[in-house]
Image 1 (cartoon, rainbow, N blue to C red):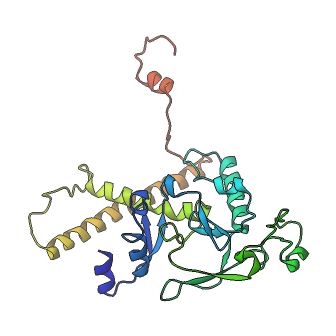
Image 2: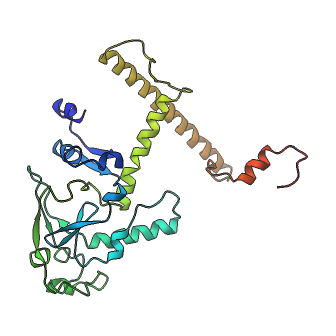
Image 3: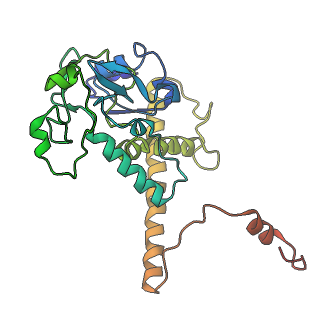
Length: 280
């Protein structure tokens, strides 16, 4: 499908995919998608997360290269769970920002063959390292490498290194994983899945097998376009009505009405209890 789109002159943008796709061999998914111009925004399979070797001394983790002096605890960052509290989300963002300081900074976009240049984070002013004397003049707000490698690898001896497409070919993507930018971008997949569920809902559009008695690509594409128009119009009308109701509540000094997303067993039992039932 992606190949047909590019053949028809459609420029590919972000490609959102779950770990069922990203876990495949890079030759069958990631590399062909990048060759077509797609920017991957993917969820990594647990087996693909964490440290996966080195390249010229730099540590390969979650599709990026990091300084060999990066604290090991930062490599253990996992995606933020949906039930996380605001405090947990804030702490997760701080740790992701700290990890970004140790990432080798990209200097160029991938060329036609997929090669690009990346630079030591100390040379880009992201941290302080004794192997880069000029970086030691940075403020102490920047992380400091306290135990630099005794024998500096290539990534420390050179200011920049070349990153071939074969390195982290399976896990390289548009946003750092599992950063807040990746989380916000990947959340769009939930909206897309919700749209498809709405289209197949028997109570609304119901485009299950046999819904259209016409055959051929053109009539079915036309009918599908009409279904999307109807579904989007219905969603827009519902949003407008919800905003109008919130405005009326604000005028009366009431808080905006929000749907209760979680009800306990006691609340359900109390709601369904007969009038003379004993107290819960």
